[in-house]
Length: 536
Image (tube, rainbow, N blue to C red):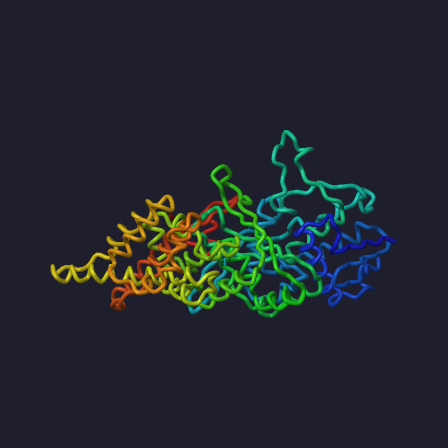
């Protein structure tokens, strides 16, 4: 008789192993509902608790494990990957597609890990816009036949470590083929079994990053599991199960991780079980390996109260939400550049506006940022600031910018010309960009405020603002806050024709900027599969 005990607290387990244990727990729970003990080989049985899984069976180990893996990892009649632990055959078609694409672009990206019988076309209708997509129909994949790697030629479970390929633990690959023995990764068979089930517990996001472009095309969110039963309720929550294609488009690493951590089901469970972190891995193409997806970034995101609260405020602002746009080749999703900047900061425990002045370093990026002017303005008003003086600083800059624009408009009226506010912004940004230390920023901001005329917020709150102006350590934050003020300034209402023209320009830029790449396939194939029409 064979007996295996898997404990969530084992010191040799990584976050991916613990996620795999949760995936196995969910799979066994569903198998128990679908197949009775008498119909399982070797009288396979299990006991499930919040921290532990106990497996036992009789007879040949290979026969039992092979049956377990083939029952756990299947394919649907449509050629989608089907995971019993998620009861994925009952998921909405859009979420089946996301799960399928997510696994193929992270765990199973290499063509040697799966067999396909060709491309299949599919059309989703989202917000009354048609999305013609395609996907690779799968006949089989590596998880289904892995039992032979866990057992010896006699069918007995191995008692020695086995090599772990990159598809089983994304990113854990041999770095130097000349030194494979010292740079490869190995696992004992039971730990490798856990890694097999990690895809069941993980979450998958399609990324639309303007900061990292092709370097970040997919995000794999690995949750920190501290209670197996509680996590199963999260992963199987009805709100997750009814999510669609649009819900799984994120701006980047931070957006994907925080979307998971602040989800209603997760947030409720976090209060009870302290689930306050997740690991996010991004995949994309890099110059030195353009023919394959590469793990490009890994970050542990911890859900601090202020970060999650600010993210939830951001998510409630309509101007930051994903938008469906019709295009010549079908619908596509546009995402907010400002949301990417903010969520990256929140994920790295920075102030939500930190680094704006260094990251938005071109006219094109500044223009993209100003498309979110209304959303940024609402964030200035609604977000949770660490100090009131920083919010006052932005509001004071708004007053000064308004005065500056007003003076320019007055001069234009005198000469019967139209005021060129874009030219003014270029000049202001150029001068701001030359602020390389506290002294130069102090000179810039005091000159700007003095030239703007009476700025009541500066006069009434001078003491509170002094630290951001004269502080040797805070001048960079002051520079970021000024750029935020410039991008979020709301002047007089534009004419409707101007707003329509700006929105049309934004849509054209979004459709032109949509890019995609695929490891082991062409960029054109990826564009077709994912409804991403981007050529930059």
